Image (cartoon, rainbow, N blue to C red; front, side, top):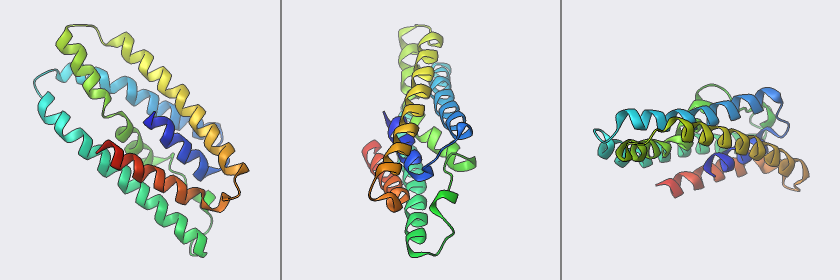
Amino acid sequence: MDAFAVALAVGCALRRPGLRHYLRLSGTFGGLQWLMPLLGALLGATLRYYLESAAHWIAFLLLCWIGLNMLRQGLQARRGQSKQVSDIDPSKGVSLLMLGLATSLDALSVGFSFALLGESVFFPALIIGLTCALITALGLYLGQSLARFSRFNGYAEIFGGLVLLGLGVHVL
């Protein structure tokens, strides 16, 4: 659900995401949701305590950093200090990677659980990744629709930044 909420915010910010945005966001979010349980299973119980205690802080910092950047860019666009809000693309580069990591860190614990139970994690991780990719695409689409039909269309980037900040606080 956190990947859905982030995709919703990104869809609002982009307003008209294209196929590349869908593929990048869904592929990254779904891929990381698939990879993290596998990584968690590999790390197993050895590093569980250290990673679990830090995962919430890492996700909090990543989401807040990107949320604050989106909020700042949205406010600058509202004041006419930047080109256009639609020029901002959180589905690329470092922002995309950080959003993907922030929304998938909790999946490490899924891998830990499977390792402790002695169960195979590959098939469940695959289902998790595919489901996340589909939900991410749906969130992106609904965010685009929300931005298009909203009376507050000019505030989409600000809304997206606030959603990410809220998610960061919720994770913490």
